[in-house]
Image 1 (cartoon, rainbow, N blue to C red):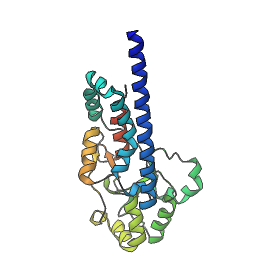
Image 2 (cartoon, helix red, strand yellow):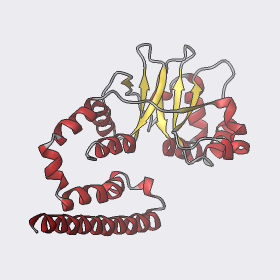
Image 3 (tube, rainbow, N blue to C red):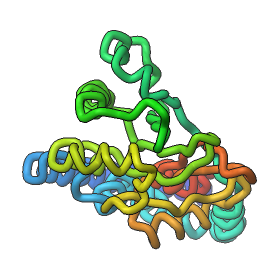
Image 4 (cartoon, rainbow, N blue to C red):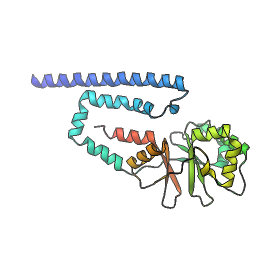
Amino acid sequence: MKSTYVRNEAIRNEAIAIAAAVGSCALAFVVVMLADWEFGGITDIGNPVMMLVLLPVGVYFVASGRITELAAFGVAAKVAKTAKESVKPEMIPYDDLQIVGLRKLQGEIDQSRPGVMKMTIGRKVPYTVEDLKLYYDALSQLRSFKLVVFLGNDKRVVAYMEDWVFKEQVEQNADRFVQLINSGRVEDFTGVAKKTISINSTNIEALRTMQEQNLETLVIVDEQTILRGVVERVQLLSNIMLSLAP
């Protein structure tokens, strides 16, 4: 009799937890839609939206009582372990000469991974404003486009900028922008980031650097400062949240 009561109580608690999670999911969806309508895109309002998207997971664990259960079995250790794991670089690299033809390949491009365009500063054949506008036109069609990474002639990472910065500069400051790229002084341009992390860095180090630099995507390099990939804030937060799963 007691076991039946315990089982029924567990089912009841599980149902309440699921209902709470579904309710918070609906709330998060409404907030995201309102943000999209008000601000013209969720990427424009930053981290609070990501927390809303992850909210249902946290609500479920708390409402079901599993957060306590998980703590007893080392949830803190699991989160700490995930935070201390090495970052996992991801990237689909596009050389600048490939970009113009991308519009024809949109249906064939894997857009589940972050797209990165590589540009060589101070190269022998200078870029033109028309080049930048062609890149802008092609990249604007790719929802996976995240960064433009500027490389020296030795292929080492010099600096980088997020997609919205690149688009803004092409639209508003194309002449000066192309001059700085061709002169090799792109680091002087507003909105350019220089801080990278090593391929041996941990998830928590990546998050800390993102917070300090106010970035959503971070460049990962090897010992020779060669581009090895990027890591996104949403990816890091998702990995840490998933470590709570039983």
